[in-house]
Image (cartoon, rainbow, N blue to C red):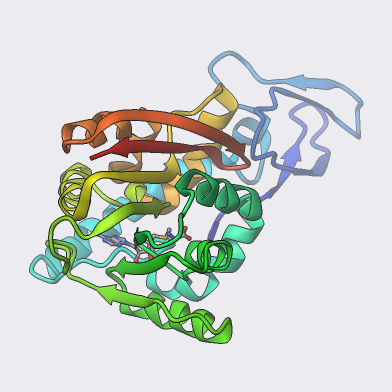
Length: 297
Ligand SMILES: C[S@@+](CC[C@H](N)C(=O)[O-])C[C@H]1O[C@@H](n2cnc3c(N)ncnc32)[C@H](O)[C@@H]1O
């Protein structure tokens, strides 16, 4: 997470002794022992935590809120200048971070586990035509195409920069998969073209309107009886998971991620015409609850 500080210098309010302390990403500390006077220092009722009360750097949640306020100001200014430009939301929120996408996912998430579980739920069969909506760096396509060499995979994304990374990885693995780009509105496919559509970590980048528009397009291009499988951030399964997810929200924006963490994705999937919509699985990660949803056309 760019711009966040993970160490803070705590100053004892009794003796003035200073000590460096690591800021936990998954816990709120309300007391510490001073190494100088050995007093137990506790925060008062109206204070957030020891870092916000006595630290040179505030806790990660407070830092994140401050970053969000700065980001919102920058976005307002950008919006004003670029109102008419087409908006591409890069994989990590900022264009310059795209090259670091794979490394970031590897560090912050149990990558092998969540991607394999996604492909297990997709369960690609011989001869099936399968679309990945928002293929990113082709990490899921690589796993799925290796597991199911007799399925026919296609990708769709909005970002030409990430497509170059994906193409390079597919070529390196001797895989030939067509990776399409579009402008974020109508999918460049005929109705009833695919047996299955899979999407991973895309919907939390889309606002409500784009979520519904994309789901309706997915429904259109699926064959009758076709299946949708989504893996994305969902309703937090504990208070800790909710706290952790603030870090994702600061990076990716509250406007698009709030619906996910409120657990609204299944509602939107149903509203777009799908039946038998279910949350079929979840994994708690260091940065939030990652959920799997399915729906049938
Ligand atoms: C966080 S990345 C996820 C990539 C990949 N699915 C994965 O599991 O690693 C989000 C991806 O969604 C793409 N994206 C964003 N908005 C999109 C849209 N409206 N339609 C299609 N793709 C979109 C981005 O370009 C990016 O590749």
